Length: 238
Image 1 (cartoon, helix red, strand yellow):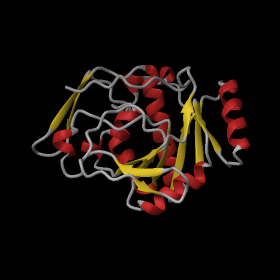
Image 2 (cartoon, rainbow, N blue to C red):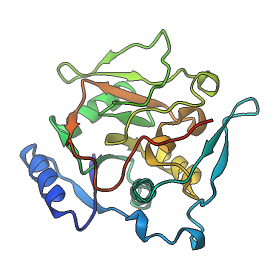
Image 3 (spheres, rainbow, N blue to C red):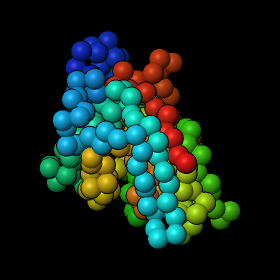
């Protein structure tokens, strides 16, 4: 699987750190130059939603109102992830693994995600670091073994009822995940003009209708300092 690492071009120290880590794991990867949100001229950019409120419709019975504008960091992060999705589609890749530059992998990501995808080939997204979020889970959720010692994969959310149970909830952080090409196309369609931070666009399963899975244990950890491409976790649902 292709691995993309999102990193600001001027953040040389962070890039050197994750490069060293991935090289030690013998993983091939590509740096994707992140976008700085503060460089975006919001009022004059048709790719950015610059209003204080937007309505998100899940179906004819369910909707969510989001209030407040994205911070510069959130905007840059969202545009960066969407840029990787566009690159995946442009190259006709079947999917890819995406890392933010503050994630420190502790395993062979290619082997783990490939093994997980064989178990759940219907997956649109598989998170390797399912920390945070808060999706309600089905009582029937089963953590399935994959062909890698100690790892299991399981479905996030409540299929068929997310529009009701998870309309104001999202899946975990997008620090480390696999995404399919079809999911990229879906998120590109829903992501522009940009009005959601990347965690929300990818993790709001009631809205994007994607099949979202996660791995346990985590595939690594994050640096104590936040990612240089942006801040997360300030979504505002009403």
